[in-house]
Length: 489
View (cartoon, one colour):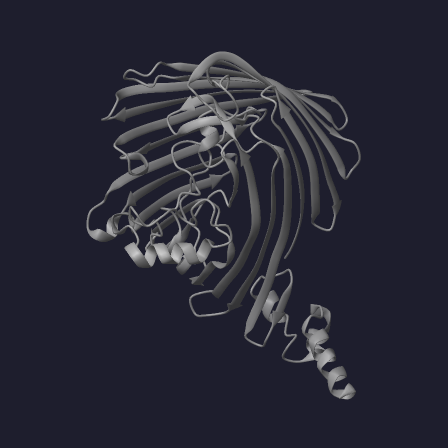
């Protein structure tokens, strides 16, 4: 038995050996197959297939009084919020893990691949409000599930089919100033019109992308074939509040009872993009709900970034007919410019959104922002910024405007430790009125909210990162966040 264990252990070790030993270790270590396919990283190969493995684990712990929120700015795509004091301590703990395997072999049409990515999200969120304690996942999918599973074949032209992310290019649309812009904060992190996390993109898909040379790429795909948005009455995806840990069963039950929303299924995606010396640009077209024979709505997103010596210039525009299944048509655009001059970096940005809503009429929101960055010494930078947003709601609702100003310092204490501190405030008449008790938001007021934060980030190497951040504001809310993560490939 000991001899058998020794032999098996030796074979396993051989399978993970480096390419330098490949010629002597036989079939399990033919890593020259991976070299021929242009693959690297953690790989195991047979004489015809190369298997790449990658993965990662992240942990997050949050505590404080922060779960209840109030508005500080109103935009066409929802309020921008801050935390306010409520009934007691809130906390959350979250472990996220993923493992990805890519099997690649050569074919007459180019590399043939099978991709499987398994993901697990294990979390608990506690919200202590005036109405009691709530356990929820805050709309996030939990449990163990397959995040990606698809096949692909091709080199300059690639055919892909299965469950995967979208080929839609919605980049080149983030403002350069360090505070960003109010409306763009809600769109794909920062952007215009279309959110990359929108459930209409990706999912079960058939896609073809092609490199035409000279920096030009094109792509076409049918995505969201399996639309996972339940019909009315089927419940919220993935779980209703209070059903902690029942993410996938609750979702499956909702779909089996009422079925997915067939009018949303099928998103037709077309992309043309360019990447040349100092310039990136794209146009993406989207048609939603095409599988029932009628396009329920459509959208277009275009963006371009140019780098010219000390300057960067960016412009982006998006139009969405029947925005997110509403009666509103939205045209959203932004422009941003950044200049770097010795120790200074200056950025200016502006955004505008025209909304034609049959319920309240036509109105236009707009905002702008700017920042100045100064390198005061080696490893120490100071950023000063401000931004403004005007919400012209239309109808009988009063207009609202918000200013934000902030000062930030970023200091590299050592090669592995960075400290970031920020203080700032919001001013205007779009701040939620909390004067009637915690959690009782009864309209808006002309007021101000001040805040401060400090973060210590540590990256000792080996792909490990961690941070500790504390935040508080004049609404008596506070939050402490600890994060740690490590990935491998």
